[in-house]
Image (cartoon, rainbow, N blue to C red; front, side, top):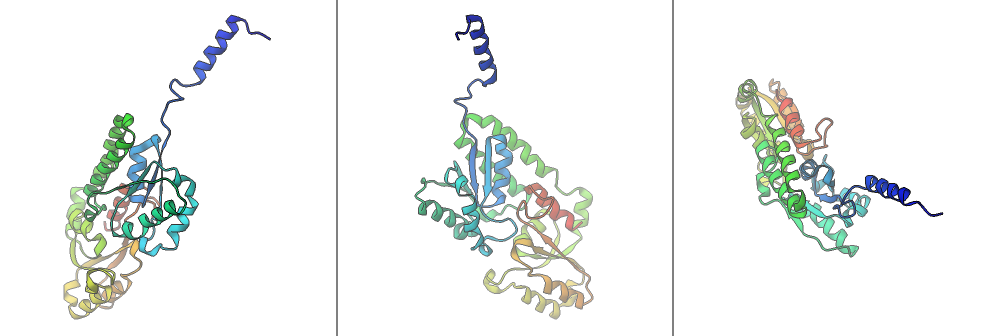
Length: 292
């Protein structure tokens, strides 16, 4: 049966209205592989509905504790990874030893496409302060624009909104006053934000046995508490680092044995590692409120 010219015109108009203009040429969603949720957070926020992203490492553990977990996570996401457009790495020692090689080996073993990591320019600065998180966001935005320049303005607008989230969690004047007067013992990985962002009084710090030639282990701090209890008399908190295990239990017990009522609290580094801390700004806010 033939369509009358008027009916044909109506049908063509209907098709035009249903199919968005430029639909055939619109770029597909960018797939992003991140070594950790520290990168996945700014990638998904700044990228908005233009991106999909996954994190290779589990946010609740340091990568060096995930040698059996990381390959499994890669296999579970193999279809996503093999077709990814962007690969993002913080490029610190954990990334270089565990996360990045695992992805490299997976791609090579399966003869998938060659790719280049977008790596943070200065991994030694860390990320767990608002200032450093903003610097990280700058690099993520640049990587997105490089891959998808047509949406530069979109990424810039979302970047501006993202960095504002860190301004909102800065300590108030009354919080600063309280924090400045609070003495703590802190795990090395959290020393910078505790001392230089929150402004707390760090009496001493501890580290895993593989750091600083084993000179700042929890056992060494316990020895110092026993030798110099007066030095620790006003310590209010022992600040643990979630991803490093339970190093500080003995420190807390030693303080209590000396009649010092310090509380062990657990800061975290990664979005998604604790309930209610799904973004980096929420992670820092969570940590701040543990000591207020």
